[in-house]
Length: 180
Length: 160
Image (tube, rainbow over all chains, first blue to last red; front, side, top):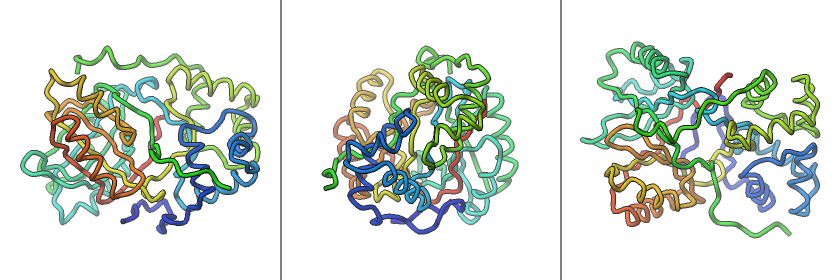
């Protein structure tokens, strides 16, 4: 399996580097970190660990890129970001790597990925998420992208989200046994 | 765009402390012994007030989550984006069928012929294909699988 190429993260995957205790910590925190003064201790106690062990392991997982960060995930709409556009672009394969990196730096861009086309229904191979307080703002951001992509881009669309149907974040479906 | 407005949460009324908390904590909590106390000091709040406000922001749905954001592939798991072309008359049934899969982490309605877009996160990379087959069986629709081939940027930050 390939690892991500995001330059801000370590290149080596921690895949296989997680032991049973790490996995137990992942399972215990995937719905959230406890909102108490000692969150590490609160995670540790039911697992029979100490808070310092949990803290150190989470720090190591963050350094290895298993944890991107421990952060607040906002509901876009509740913050006033009512226009959330998944913009999709049909970009010349010969230039997509360079252009993907370039457009990733445009303000308003949160995620930028290359994905496969499904011809004839779906010709788009570059996906760029844009967030704005109005559709006009997203359209201005998309226009900046279009200019940057230039002639390498044949066509694009903005797909606005009109309803959140589910948002639970990542869940591990199968539960490995607790650490001994 | 107006079709589904009723399902979209209204923008929240946030005071200055809420805004500082939201802006600061989108960047990440320090992994230190007393992380909330450290962030509270930065924001000139007491630890208790920070925790109370965070809880309220979660309860009010201003934040959908607070905690570690795991990198699915580096956990050894599988991750993909997939889409369906769902007939309008069948939209509620298909939504329920798709959301019933625990592997569906996010699901959004989008205005396009492909009108349902969801993220699958699975325990193993191989499991993605199995879940797709199961979703096709449950919905009777063809799944367009669009796994990422290259990641140029991932950084959601919505300043308020």
